[in-house]
Image (tube, rainbow, N blue to C red):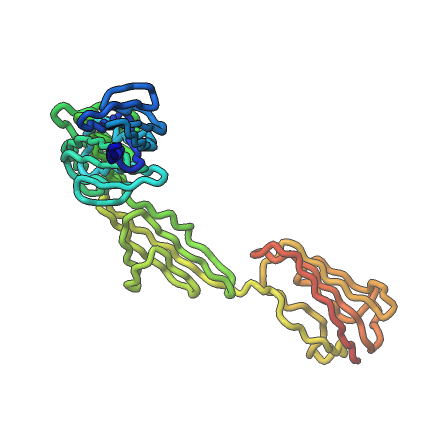
Length: 375
């Protein structure tokens, strides 16, 4: 009897393949015969799909079986997009984030994203479950057009400004929706234009202000009450000011009598004006003596009011202690002499009410008090 060693068979470790990869299993053995799990009797098998594969190898009647498990994974889908062009300082974000993915870019970065700032060819390898997909993109940069509307400008009303942004092969869009390369402006505003060449745009803007010749609208010479003030306002856009006392504000507070003068100038012209302001006592009513002695000695013979304004309405009434009207006057020049119906009133206390309209404030004024008559 003869003893033979069984053949040595090794299909390798269980393995994983990607996409359309194939695996060649080769168990060629001298004088061997073969039987695979798919009933093939060849010495080799090409694996194209997942599964468990085994083979029996027989030499001299001795058989050895080995098996292998093959897994298949789909390679990741990676798409950097079409080759593209950017303008000026534009950037492009490339993002290939995939769950469980690892990354290797052409610049050796291992991040999932890349921000591109210059022209070139960029590629990335994305690996998931040992399967790698590479994609690449070519990026071009185009120059943006140069647009300069100039510095912000201040002009005079009636003038105009012409803005010309003519550029070779340019397309234009202004803030007023015009598509011409040249614009003429007559009004104050902020104007902008977009100039586009080969898909790349540049915007510039300019502030234009049109000034009027200065004007001054002082009130006519005026009279104020002694406790009042008036503010003279000469504001004009872009102007400078000089008052009679050298002050340079657009406004001037007047609190004392006098003549006030101002000169106003801007780049478009000059104006000047003056106004005279007087102050008077607008209180009209002064304190009155509340005791009078109509005894014929020529001193303090009448009870009179001290109102020094030219009143529009006036009423002076005296009451006795029973509230009866015993004297009334609607003239500032008629006073009570201590008589009622020609008869002398007795000594005692009386009451007065003075009503009038203040000619300056138009307020209705009422003063009440007591007076003493002594004989």
